[in-house]
Amino acid sequence: MTHTLTVASPTASLRRLAARVMEDPDSRSVMIGILAVLLVHFLLFATAPYLLRTEPVHGAVRNPAQRQFSIEIAPNAFVKEVRKPPPPNKYVEANPNAPDNVPDKTNNFSSQNSQLAQEKPQPDQHNDKPKTEGKKDFESNQVVSGQLSKPQDPVPVSLDAAKQPVKTEMAPKQQQNPLAGFDKLTGTEDAFGSNVGKVPNSKPAPEKQDGANDSPMVQGAQNTEPAIDPKHPRARPELQQTHTRPAIFEDNQFGTSNIGPIAYNAKWSSYGAYLHKMMEAIQIQWERILIDSRTEPPSGSIVTVKFTLDSKGTITEILDVESTSSEQGKASCVSAITNTAPYGDWSEDMIAVLGSSQDLTFRFYYE
Image 1 (cartoon, helix red, strand yellow):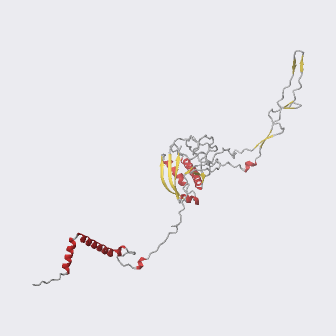
Image 2 (image 1 turned 90 degrees about the vertical axis):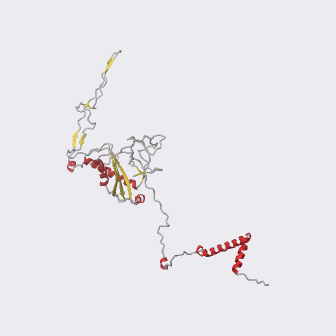
Image 3 (image 1 turned 120 degrees about the vertical axis):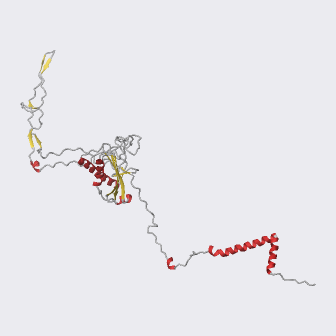
């Protein structure tokens, strides 16, 4: 009897090896770990070129000429921006009679420097407005009222009238009386009497002369008067008036302890001087329009006009008009603003602060 051993195929050997490994728990764990390590390394090998690349991956090959580019830096990119000063806060009308005095701190501006004061000081009062008596629930930035209309020029005296002789009158003679005499005493031991002369009312003289009691003491004095021409009368005397706009005062019972001509705290600026002249021109034009139209808008009515003023002093747009007055009163206010324009070019510092234009609001009050 013979026995022959046959060599197993490699496939069968692997199957038997795998079966023994799977049956043994320790061998099975080792085999799973080896397979997991091989799988991780394979994945890293396949994905490493994409994860660790340093150049962008393009889907298509582009022409190198299309990759050219240029960079331009703005001229002021690294220049620190200079902040513009804040625009003026509130305009108040200065008293032209107040002395020039720069206030310590204020947000008000005007056509001249002035410091808060009033004629009758109030102790322990430190407010930002002087005490004024006026309308209640009314806002006003004026503290003094005046007249803007130019006074009538005196009529010049003609040359013919100047050449006329003056009117000359001789003073009347003075009455002269001699002295009344000396005292004459008469009487007895118990009584006595006297003849006392009266004090004369005129100059004593040796002889009596008739004349006037109230004539000049200087004899021969002459009374002269200038010649009067009815066609060329003398200039009419006029009262001294403050050259400023007519004002409607705000009622304010709390003033300041500073004494002096009534004034606001205000700092002078070119913008304030510009507005001052502008408001004077509008005020005169407004009054002229009302006089020529011979109309009287309702008393107590208000017209508010908002408009845009550019750096050339031109009214570019009327933004809004609110009125409680009549149509004639409303139109007069708008015409007073537009008819007096342009108001002149702005200064360089005004343009630096305000820009190329500014919105203004004017309120007109009819009393």
